[in-house]
Length: 213
Ligand SMILES: C[S@@+](CC[C@H](N)C(=O)[O-])C[C@H]1O[C@@H](n2cnc3c(N)ncnc32)[C@H](O)[C@@H]1O
Image 1 (cartoon, protein in one colour):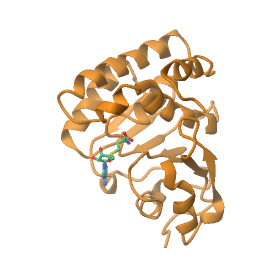
Image 2: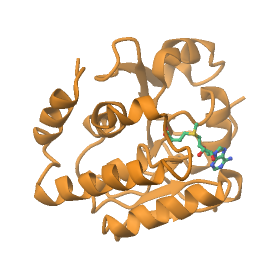
Image 3: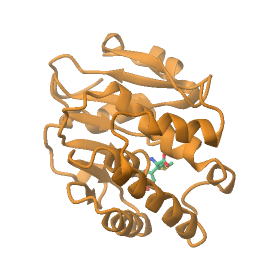
Image 4: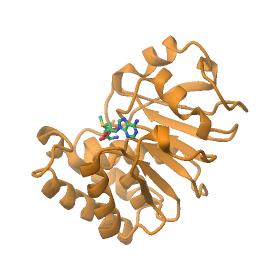
């Protein structure tokens, strides 16, 4: 388990994706986030004190479940403050990361951070997910976006049999999976590296597109 800022940074440095450019992009994100958080409430002040652990590594750990050759599109739903979308794009700049976010000030923030970080392949879809044009996703992620059942209902139209879902679900991961009426069997829970009680729901929808109820 990673519990301190020092451990978080050491874990990142050991990631195969980590290099000097990735470090620069992540430093840029962390400093811009601290500044922007004084203007709008993106993340809690307490979490900002452990930003490498609570946001950067909490996001980057998803990469350990996604093959490195994946080029996208990687849809991150409700990216908000930038997580996991911007952290993923910082470490996999060749992957087409599409960050879906509906709130105007957050869209503006994400666009500004994306540009400053030099993420040419990443894109902000500044609209409600319900309005985003359907495309086959290679990966779908979402942190603190919606309960699992709702998330599947909203996003199944982006999923093919190969789409990998990686959903950091905090402490409710197993419960949300147990409560799922359908497709429960196609997902499993991976242990979070940043919180002993949190889980990440991982899986594919096994060849199905369409309704989840
Ligand atoms: C609780 S925040 C989580 C932000 C980020 N993923 C994180 O973990 O720090 C949820 C975000 O989803 C966005 N959101 C909620 N419903 C949405 C929708 N239907 N389409 C797009 N974005 C939505 C909100 O504006 C908000 O920024």
